[in-house]
Length: 311
Image (cartoon, rainbow, N blue to C red; front, top):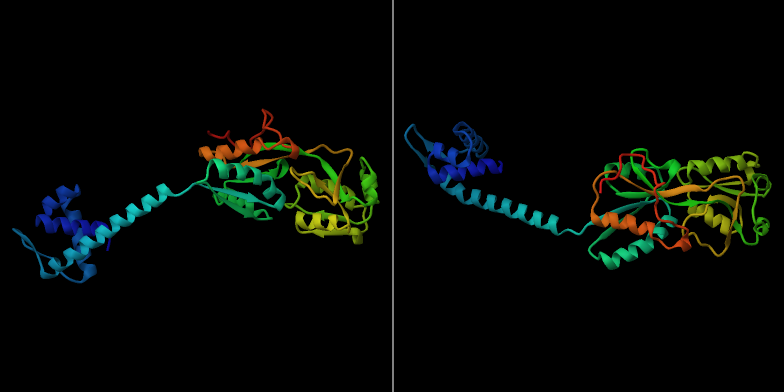
């Protein structure tokens, strides 16, 4: 049973004429007859007495008029309520993060949006895996963070900052007294905590390999994510080679520049196409994060790996 059948039934019941009902519904008379026949087959009863000269309701037809009308009213009311719900629903901003450092990065931005756009609902996903890229592609998230070398190819990449490659260690570690370290120094610096992609960008992993390939396997601590790497490093069990992420602060750790490596580009990634004003506001606020966490506004050097963003 569908609403077209019910509309045809009620219209024929009103006019008691298939031709006039078809004219009113703006469909053909055979189409009306087909809908009525299909409805009668489903109900397993005749709704009309039909002759070549007249049409009249059966007793079952009279009885069904009430139910058909109620069903159509309920259908219309349901459509109306759902439309009201869609139009009145607050905008959702779906953000994907791979680690808690990225969550810390967006907190000041969300604080501003909470004051300026209180109807906005942030939906935060903390997914430490490549599945974030699939979620961006299928629309489960709208935006994520990435280093340039690991950004999804079919997406827009906007640089936010360049992260220096540093040695992380406790302040009482033997390396902590150095103002700068070399690969050779790190190769002989004891235990090293290591993350693999996607927890760290491929470019950083290649730098790590230059160090740990000369290491005793027993001196390597493999970590599933950055949180574990930072915890082991802050506890004094190892040093680590990492990027100095925006907003990173740990009173137990010191960051020592590693000579010979350029900073890695870090930015925001989102799908190309049209975006809402609030989404564009989010991107704008990201570029305005205070300088004390090493972010700068996007410039003409920002690159896109897909078609330019339609604004």
